[in-house]
Amino acid sequence: MQEIKVENITNDSIRHPAFLENGIVADILRLDKIHPVISGNKWFKLKNYLSDFQASGKKEIITFGGAWSNHIVATASACKQLNIPVTGIIRGEASPTLSKTLIDAKNLGMHLHFASRTDYKNKLISGQFNNESCYIIPEGGYGHLGMLGAATILELVNKNQYTHVCCAAGTGTMAAGLLHKLLPEQHLEVVSVLKNFSGLEASILFLNPVAKAVMNIHHNFHFGGYAKHKPELIAFMNKFYNQTKIPSDFVYSAKMIFAITDLAYKNYFPPQSRLLLIHCGGLQGNASLDKGSLIF
Ligand SMILES: *Cc1c(COP(=O)(O)O)cnc(C)c1O
Image (cartoon, rainbow, N blue to C red; front, side, top):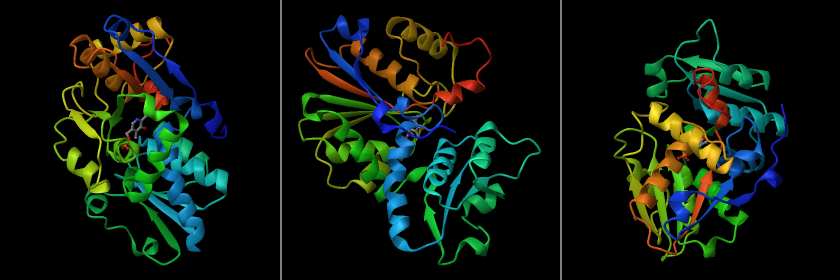
């Protein structure tokens, strides 16, 4: 598999009617360019855990995720690059055919350990992983070190020129990191990709209790729930690609971009706002859509 290349990230202006017609400037930070499979923010969230592991003297990394987890494959790839032994505890019994994500993780050298949904939920994993030589990275990279790693995303741009920073949220770790770096007069617009995840705000503020910037969470753009989609979203992705040549993924970035253009059309952003959208990648997830759904 290809190496992760942070230097491939670009910050591009978006020429889209939602912004052009409303006197808004919008840029998009293309973290998706970091790697064809590894999602941009997963790498940033992992960085600090990996250096903490290296300083800890422990021998192996253990982490958690589902069969389609971007976090699992990102951890597998990072550990391969750094030559770290790693085990992924996977939610659910092993099925005879592995998901593409798990095949990739396995090919990268990750050891897969399947745990029943109940054991997984109760973190009842076998004692072999509960010893001093194992370093645990929480599911999705959610935690203080993940938040601090995600905060460094904003070091890639001149952040002070923006009035609003916009991102998608699953666990909210990235949102917490962005919030950490923003000034009191700046706004963070968070688009939740889960349905009715009312705990999101508390999860973000738990990682970042002294945040100063204004945070707004948008809960109405989930299109049916996590990893769900509707024809309207797929049509939007194709149209947005035609208009801007920017590809998006249906789980995270497309929902975020849809939400921000919709809000712009509804005059949510004052004229002369300067927006930064964070595109984290996840494009390989589009492979699970019906063939021919997307034009890119
Ligand atoms: C994981 C992921 C997110 C959400 O990140 P959280 O820190 O869990 O909120 C957004 N976009 C992509 C592409 C991801 O893989």
